[in-house]
Length: 153
Ligand code: ZN
Image 1 (cartoon, rainbow, N blue to C red):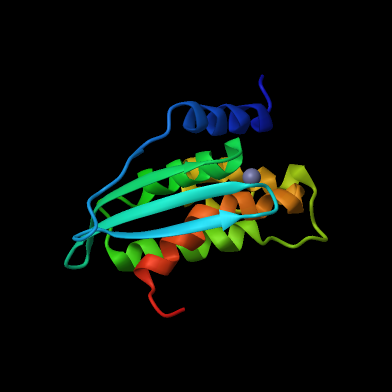
Image 2 (tube, rainbow, N blue to C red):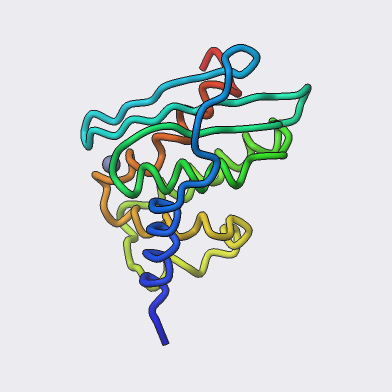
């Protein structure tokens, strides 16, 4: 039986090789923010088109390591067609997952938190928590997206 970590690795590689929602949107009406992670050299541009309270379209453009690009792709796939409120909630939960307890990095326990089951494939990124230097890679797209939908923070 393949380990959970292998499965997660496959999900991340799949998003890296076949990024979802890749490209650009015209600004305006879309809003664009850029994010950089100088630690790793990751760049990401997030384009968001809203219709009232709904995230009608989201596109990701960028380059960098597999974790940064896969995470942004997974984010785009998770928030499209969601409301702003739902997206903010997902950002919260994702960041929470990525900030888990540095003292408790036992990989066996990483997959058993019920709260996070609803994150679906996003859980694949949880293993990154074990490599603190890569956490910024995983959260780059999310923080950039957050800047768009939560202006002024
Ligand atoms: Zn990176």
